[in-house]
Image 1 (tube, rainbow, N blue to C red):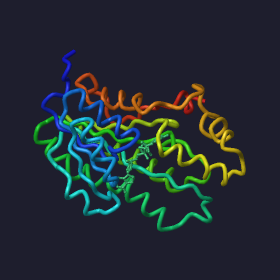
Image 2: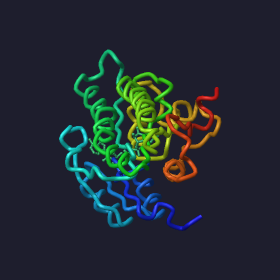
Image 3: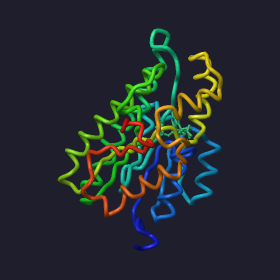
Image 4: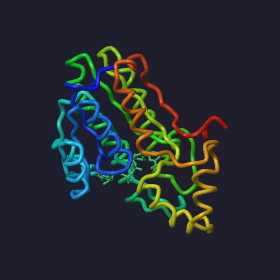
Length: 250
Ligand code: NAD
């Protein structure tokens, strides 16, 4: 295979300044793509852009107008930006629920709406949505996140149906727990919500339902994203790839 399989391609990765998004920026850039990243974190965006020769767009993706500042003419769209908020449903802050739907469902929709026409025009494109095992399974205290990821899985299927005649695929990657700041930040909240120790959060909550007893590395998720962007994956669309250590097999 060529050392630049994505040479000449342009990609947009949301939430590209950290964790899985950062690993996707690195993988796509290493494969030869010109990569734009969109993220709210100014300092980290600049640092990742410098490290991987990417172009940073600092923006709050909960603002519907933010997508207008992002490039529309891309070949690859990776909808990755996401946040978590842990609270019992009866106490879940309404504003936070709405904000999470905006960031994790409405913004991917707006970006597909914006970026698909250029992909259709070229007869080639790849949309990759970073879903989660929580796109197909539920956990307590994650009403907003589980709702958003289930919504993203539905949006992905509709995109696949509409985009197929234009040579464009849309797929989800659905990881279990990945070693990123988003997961580290949950440990104390989960311990408090469940009344258990922080060690028990890792062993029982994060790894309790997976057969592979370790966190996933961000680079392992990015490797699947990269494969989905290649020519080998042209027939795979409307799918959700479980990267969950057999969590959903049980
Ligand atoms: P992370 O916290 O390491 O990175 C998320 C990035 O998104 C950050 O750079 C952050 O600044 C950016 N972001 C957050 N809110 C934003 C906003 N309003 N506007 C612009 N940028 C914003 O998280 P991660 O673990 O890499 O998660 C990335 C994606 O992967 C999310 O969609 C998450 O739901 C999904 N995911 C993560 C895991 C996991 O275990 N870490 C598992 C399954 C799915």
